[in-house]
Length: 315
Image 1: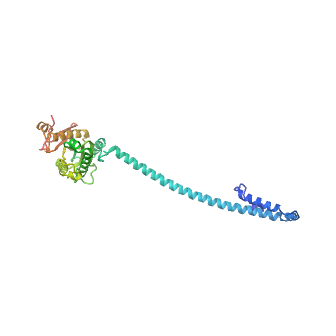
Image 2: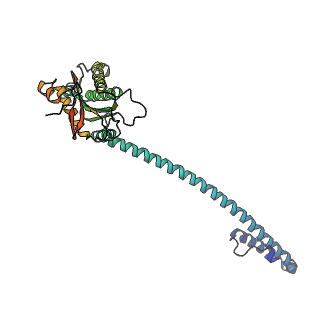
Image 3: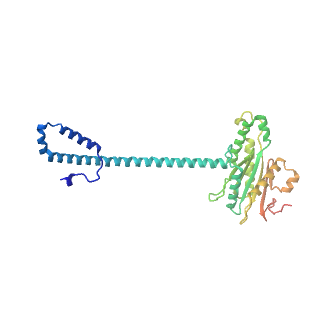
């Protein structure tokens, strides 16, 4: 009977069952001496009862333990799910923060345009994937006499003007005729102060670059600046220099070469096309405040193209 009903060796400790047994034994010990002899007859029955009690208690404990283990496992699974959610949330938060930090590192904080280093880096990458036989345009511009705006109206108003010019640049300086399969992208940047830049790839001809620059210049001039701030009573204009490069197979141009030429053209626009400068730079097309030159690459140097499309080397 003991081998059949007794709990297996190493069974779970049951302090509460032992205490209950002690209570029963104490109760039996209080039996009067005159009834002690009955105890002997009850020994076998008592033993069986005790063993049955222990077995049932052990079974109950085992069931509770299993339920407890299952509950623990359920709670653990819940904890794991919560931990996974938190981990994903933390990862997404970190990714979002990293993206924000990256944006801060590559963009001008006032206008959200690309800063100088990122703009030039992207121009270099776009030049590599630009289509031979087409043109790319790099433009540099600043606001005419912008220092007077800050002096007369204050830097807060000057900042409003800078932000609005940046928005017009993004809205208007882009190619509308690019096919969807072209890889290179239009880029816009701010180099600091009132100096902005743009890059337009895969243009069909230099005239398109000029039209885009002129459209932007006109939009700045025609903008209702008083609606932006009633204190802006003076006209706001820009000076733009644009270099338009004919892309040819196997040629690698340094973006800094294009930027330097655009800078020369922008200052030429500021000087209102002084004759000596005009002759030296061989401007392909110009108007007040916009100077553009079409070039191609020869022996690593930018060579202007005159209006009849005959290449002519610079002196």
